[in-house]
Length: 353
Image 1 (cartoon, helix red, strand yellow):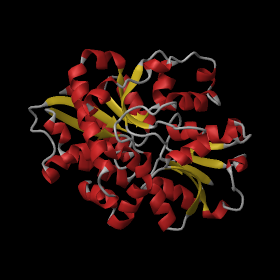
Image 2: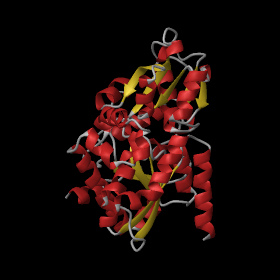
Image 3: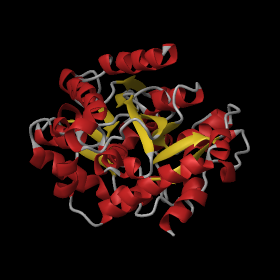
Image 4: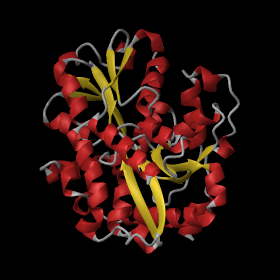
């Protein structure tokens, strides 16, 4: 009980520190059973998964799998928790608070340099799903990442994937990481507020924040990485991002459970590939649309191209991620990364079969 209380307290603290949208998202996670009948009856095998922002479209498969009842069908009682940034989901995983994390694959490489062996077991995407947005007040000053020098650039959190990608775009375009100021502003209303107040000149975020910024005419898209082509243009190849990743030791000692999780998530990815954005939006918690379901469905539609249909790691994806991280991260630049230890296709291949 003490451990459960501590986990709940940590999750609640993270939510209070961010936005009302994220708070609503976590509420939806805990009430999904009464809304859709998709949550287990408590008799299934318990698994806790921390998500780097349940309301973010890039991590949509986590909640959608629960809403579709696929966890329950596999005999799993999955508790979805939410943190505002992927790096906080990573922290929850390596500290043993949760058994899995839904966040960016690039954390597995970063953690390996720190002696933590973590692997992606289901790869949700082959593009980042991220967008660099420039404040309408600064569109004349920032016309490409070459103009990042001296600017305040919004990210979800220090050490997050938005931090990684922002640094890469800067370095790739001749700007040193010391030449601009990263500002942790989260996502959703806090990101939007930072744009409005001038706390940031530009920033990297995802849908539905992107859709809301555009709808409010607060910013313009500078770099769009929501599609495989966008990833190719900005990063030079496929960039596997959102995924279910877990500590390898836990995976090896709980293969039956991991297989059930892979089965559920692959079914969701397949379902997504055959349904429209409106149909997907209909399955999600009502709070996620913030009263504008049309805009929310549009946000989903813009991000759908990033998702895989089978959960398999895209060819050459790990190499692209390593190249990106080595461009600015001294820990990884000077380290030998064993990419084969950062992901496995064992479970998704069985799920597809």
